[in-house]
Image (cartoon, rainbow, N blue to C red; front, side, top):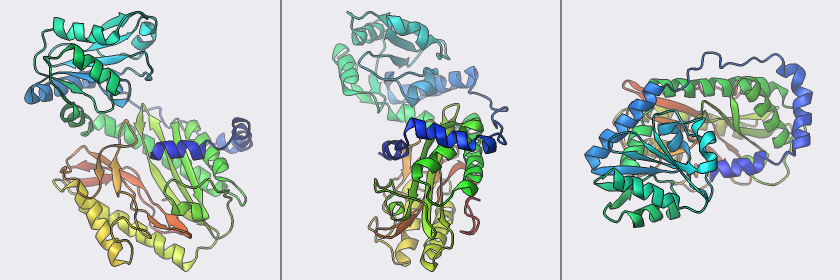
Length: 414
């Protein structure tokens, strides 16, 4: 939902106007240079290690094969970057041996352009069934055990294969896929760090260029233009002004920068597919006492969350720690408004939102390599909202920031 709403709001700027905004900024953009010269993509050895890890988890769970459709999990295990359509492209990870990739005959050359692991590729013609192709391969390999389905796979694909291999009970692939993807390697963390560094550099370039009368779309266009010039792939640039900031994903009401108004920006990019997600809130001009008080409370909420996010702690306990403090300060209770109406954070990696979440009731223990957003916003309907969001990764010694939160509203980018 979050990414969809962002796309709708940020997309309000028409393409000609977007180009006009960027052209006007070109003299200043010329001072920016790409930051990605030292980026190291995920290596073949690391991808091989991912498959080996998945197969070990499959053996432990009695799983014979995992079905994966296009998306972040397909990229994670195979490198294949593809979109979903009625024409199925998919991969099957077997408990032993190389994966299978199935794709339409006429798409094979394009699919192979991003295939980054040894795999058997089988193609299907327009009058053939790709699901039968997958089922036939499973039978040829005489794979035993359960057929696990990656959690985002569409029903018709999962159900179609399952009906053709009735001797393989269908289960969720979460123990395998989450078991791999939730724990980031040093290489993944380095890519996420680069994405965060680019987003922060784009914030520092954009913030002083915001002027009275600007719309959210104009500010977002500047942010995305800076991100692209710095070498990141712009992902989203949500900008909320005034009362719109009281609604976490914004409002369609007209908004323009004016003195004394809150400006909330929630922006991110990707580097080699890995995401950043950083929010900053500031006041254009002089801040009121109430704006300053709420901003300081959100800043403190971030640090409460960080202190609670220790190895072995339940992910939900981070959300609980923040919510206890907020309730003591007169917000809530729970998720009620005025207060914090959404979870304190979400997992992040190849997807902007990944399992698991920092949300009440989530029992998964925090472990080194897990990555999360930390965004305990406060929202006052009819007035304004404040969100500060920085992501962190877990180490054996505790959490570490990808981006350093600002210390004061007077220097709101950090």
